[in-house]
Structures are given as structure tokens and as C-alpha cells.
Image (cartoon, rainbow, N blue to C red; front, side, top):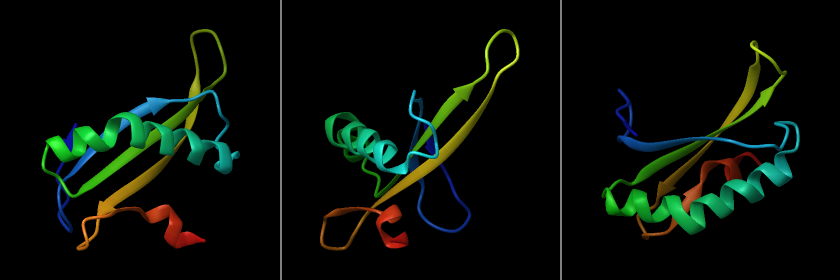
Length: 91
């Protein structure tokens, strides 16, 4: 779904669930990179957007009441035409 932000360009946002706990950032990133490379990047480019986010969540609990933890990975297209994950700037 597209989202409009008051500061910055609009972005295409994908919400998804994973079996990987949010504390396992290495494997979360591997899963997000696979989603990005095999599917979502093409959709973002088709929508002619220069910003995107993959919001991934891990449901916890069972039965009628559950809760989940989540994390967002933001990608932006740089002036040289290359995509960059802003998570890389945190290292």
C-alpha cells in the first residue's frame, strides 16, 4: 500500500509476518533482503516510487489473544539509481 509522509517522499509499504523472532536481526535481514530482491523491489519500481518499507512482524501467543512485535526496513533509491537499505546506516 502507498503511504504519504508529511516530510519526505511517498513510499510503498509492505506488511508481512515471519517465524523469525525480532531479536534475530541477522536472519530477519536475510529474509527481508530476499523479499526485496525477489518481489518487492520490482513492485516499487513499477509504481515509480523512490522509497519503500517492509514492515515485518512476529506473532506471539496462541488462542484468541495474541500480540506481535515488529520492525521496519526502509529502502530508498539514491541519486545514482541504486537502492539502499537505511538499516545499513545504523552499523
